[in-house]
Image (cartoon, rainbow, N blue to C red; front, side):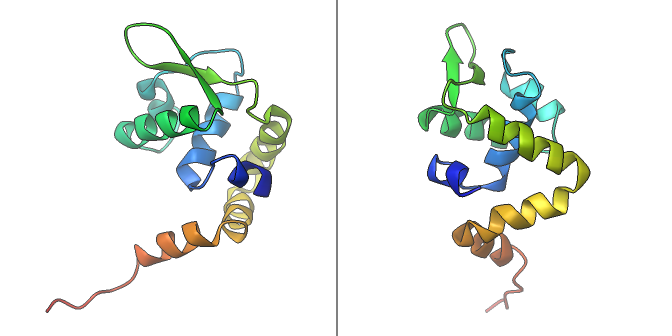
Amino acid sequence: MRQLNERGVSRLEHLEVLLVLSRHPGRTFDGEQVATSSTISRAVVEETLAHLHKHEMLVLVPGERPVYRLGPRSELPLLDLLRTHHERDRIAVVNAFYSCNLESLRSFASAFRIRRQP
């Protein structure tokens, strides 16, 4: 997980999008295709795809609309291993992700914090 975190995979959405794409490493995907293959909204998926491309995890395929595929530096063996564990025990993978990324954990936890209205 630390290896992915160091490569720019700083949010759980980043990891989940990579896991979707790693099912078919040679195939290209657009935001809508990834969104329908996951539980993430299309807007977040498109933002995530752009982020992962910026960090060289994905390659942008030339064309009319943004289409991506896994890049040569995508850590495919690690993604295959994580995907296998994710399919068996998603919670363990999420816990491992957050244990290596405390800032994301704080951000995730703050979403559930009850705030008083002034």
